[in-house]
Length: 110
Length: 114
Image 1 (cartoon, rainbow over the protein chains, first blue to last red):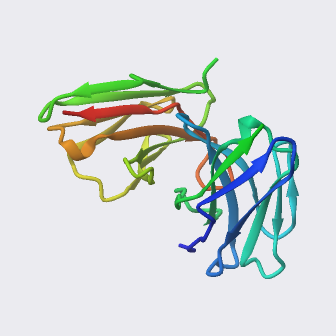
Image 2: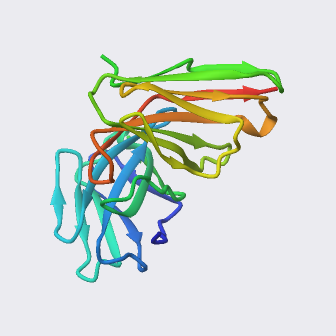
């Protein structure tokens, strides 16, 4: 399983973009990069995932480095509701389990 | 309409008791999971079932026994509860096996053993 390194915490102001980095230098060539977030007192929630190309969805964008050893989750305009712990999770497509690390706690200020 | 629902939301019980947590998903998914989040907030998988068949059993004490009566339900029974079992337990489901299908989590069951 690839190890991940994420900042313990980050801060943002509302309506500003947020870039959440993740290092996964031991990622294997077939591992996808998944991002989940956990809002306070809730279960984790899927955000986005990708393999090599950058990915966009209604929640966020995922920028994956060319060497795939790092990725960045981009929230284009943070809202108060985006305050959560964000987990970067590399994993093979045929793996059955999400391996959560310590994640990044994002605080969003009005 | 809740996609993955767990009951109860809170459970306080004494050491040595036996308790169950129920989970139901109305998404038509094939795969269901139990995760445990301890007091330090580490989330770890415990079990996974696919079409009622156990596919993951992560070195969990055998006091924990999952049961899947059908694809939509995965219950967790815990015997002889210990203080260290206090945690938040999350049920989840996904359309099929593998990580390339979004996992949907329930709201969690906070278990406190006193």
